[in-house]
Length: 107
Image 1 (cartoon, rainbow, N blue to C red):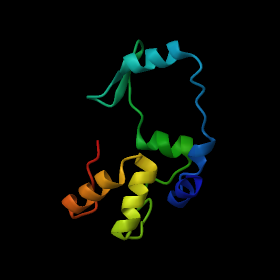
Image 2: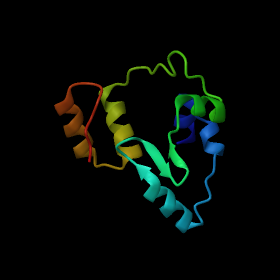
Image 3: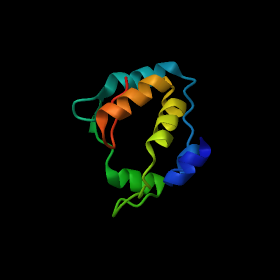
Image 4: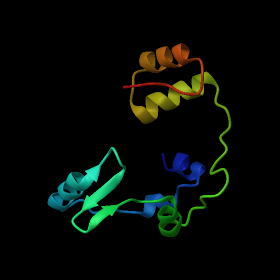
């Protein structure tokens, strides 16, 4: 799995660690998160995490293409779906055949 993360250039994220030992703190952040606006509504006002924040905090370039991926053979894609998303081989195969493209809808 670490090899797949490294291939995307997101290896610095592995070093990021959020100590979730304080469940109350996590529940407060969950309560303040508004999915409709993708922002936190805090007592001091609304806070949105921007691309500039991501660039500043994680030192990622936000200009240009982030990553170019090589095409996968359908058999490789199915095996990745099974391994990474933990779906059955039959479900992954059926969905990739039905979609006829780059995207799959697995639930």
